Length: 138
Image (tube, rainbow, N blue to C red; front, side):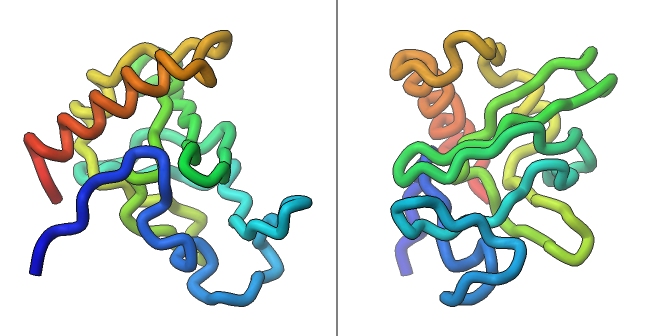
């Protein structure tokens, strides 16, 4: 079986957000009928420990991401994590597990709230995480 290629800005399995094909009470349904779970304030766990909590989330098809506030871990820096880095969501414990190490996340491109939605920044972040997937697949 071939490994699934890494797609930075898409959820690996959209149904895995709610664990069902039917909207759950915690799901966010937008005007277009897309279903996502409101992950704001969920804790984020890297493969080697806690990195912060979700400050903002987007569920755009082909452009989904999480903005994570790392708190004091990396001096209050926020990081942008493409949806493709999400490995699992535990709704009971309100935790999101990503398939990157703390070091990989710490070394990611600097988050800039003014430009993070630009195509060039998204390309830079996507290239970084795609490279880290190739170099350290999980």
